[in-house]
Image 1 (cartoon, one colour):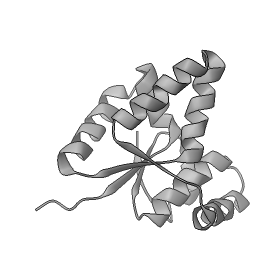
Image 2 (tube, one colour):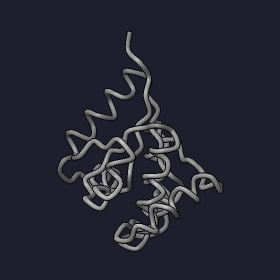
Image 3 (tube, helix red, strand yellow):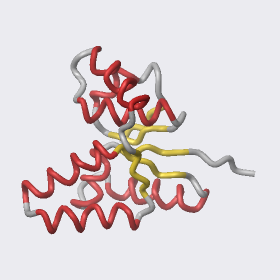
Length: 135
């Protein structure tokens, strides 16, 4: 019997997926495996906003909206930044050299006892508190 788990996506793998950049094949495989197992795919709404503004800045708001729609079609659940999550994120930000959006991804991973999927080495600073799958 397989145990369901949760996987938190940082903006890094989502942007790689949307742009077809390496390691897109591994990201597709991880998402497919998660669906097969019934795992939850989670993303902080702060990180979703980071994806949206990155795409809107390079292209336009319509393209950014389509990207958010694609993320939702992949089954990614956006987690609101309520006070308990924001407090965890702020605690990570106190450590320094990690972006506030990344702090929110780490907070979701910690709160949901989930594994964070990323290739962003900023997360090494919180690897003592959360499980990370490095891309």
